[in-house]
Image 1 (cartoon, rainbow, N blue to C red):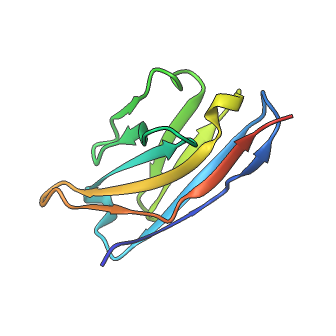
Image 2: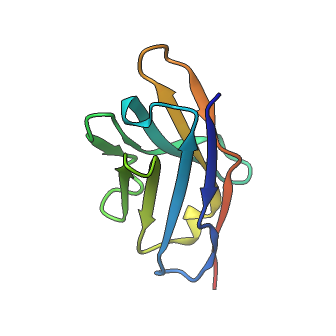
Length: 117
């Protein structure tokens, strides 16, 4: 059973930075595709960034150049570095684990990011 534990959210001023972490257990982490999603109040869930098992990355247009996703397979952890944060980045951020063999998805509990002065 895959378990994902996110951390690193909080309140930050516009222009500030945060780093989210997601620690995984119960998985062969290096074989998984890992993503960050977010859901803002009143909006649908949005894919923010993905890092594949081969370390390829892709980003939503709204965060390109500001956010960086990375993974540390030795620590079974995926990160999301968020710079130049804007109020519209305010959302609950969720870690997603996708088993590339079965297609099964698992989710973390979410961590709140609030960008406000």
